[in-house]
Amino acid sequence: MTKLDLDANLHGTVEVPGDKSISHRAIIFSSIGEGTAKVENCLLSDDVLATIDAFKSMGVNITIQGKNVIIEGVGLYGLKEPSKPIDCGNSGTTCRLLTGLLSMQAFKSMLVGDASLSVRPMKRVTLPLKQMGAKINTSMNGTLPIEILPAKLNKTPINYKLEIPSAQIFTSLLLASLYCNDASNIHCDNNFRDHTQRFFKFLNIPLSYNNHTYTTQPIKNFTNQDLKVPGDFSSASFFIVLGVLTSDKGIIIKNVNLNPTRDALIGMLKKMGADITINHLSDSSYCEPVADILCKKSALKGSEFSFPETAIAIDEIPILAIACAFAEGLSIINNIAELRVKESDRISAISKNLNSINIQTSENHDSLTVFGGKIQSGTIKTYRDHRIAMSFLIASLVAKTKFEFDDIEIIKTSFPNFFETLELIYE
Image (cartoon, rainbow, N blue to C red; front, side, top):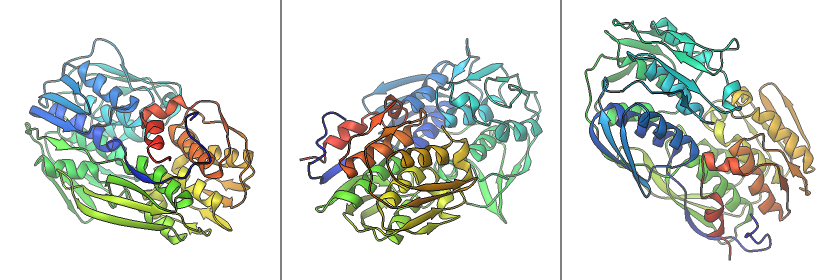
């Protein structure tokens, strides 16, 4: 932060790290597939490293070579019992997806995490897994630590209605279903990220969707394939908003994943009047849409946002709120209760921090109202939440006002080279 000139002009071209959701899944699927897989442009943040370390502890040979990760898969039934609890750090993805996978193994395991992860709800995953016969013990509050006992020999297929539109819960159940003795059915609408479905298709793992129901079939194994991870849209979102609020010449973010279950922020910003252009749209190495995004300075006007766009953009709501703070008039962001149980209570964190820098807000259980205004210097409490930290760093740069932050190291959980990337667009 100290290297950045608040009075500089911003323009240029950047690339963001590999997609975090896809990187997690690439590590997981490649570890339980057969053969060696090369994962190019894998995100090597603290969260993904937690997933890598978890599989290393279960006997998977994983080698990091620059931005690439080489994984020697052990097959569906090749994982070994870890010698100590698996530390998921701050990563909810690591914890929830591994809960599903480990619940079907023949060995005992335990999942732990940091203080933030240890208060996040896990019953949403453990309860449906118990319907499949999983033996799982949690704390009194249904949170970490999670103890997973060896699974029974005959694993019960699940017939489950997904009440919470969550890719993490869905993926956890799909991973468990791979070990069942018959077809499993998960009833849901397609209103969450579909990276896991794309992995099933890419790896030729049976998965069908009909009449709001996903059906999996038992398999013995699958064969690994190499893949290249596209740039993370959530990481790109900070530069999209920075470009829209500051850059006359424009900022280009290259090779960004534009999966339609991820990119709602672009439409939301355009609704506010943002000048955003999509160029060179193509498919990545396993059918994820990838493109370059050009963002130019725009006069934004307040708007109202609701489901399903807010569900798709749930991780981008903090940076959207920053855009709203600089917009003319009132903005209302509805149907975002899920933000209450992220790395922090993000609705409260956004509201309190905006109020501390002279932006008026109001909140209720599942919505946030932001009144556009003039930002002043203040102190930002990140609540050890990487997206809160990065969003308010962007606000500081746009306002050309220094904020005091209680913690910016947490950014490394998702975007290790955030500051180095910022420096590329300052002249």
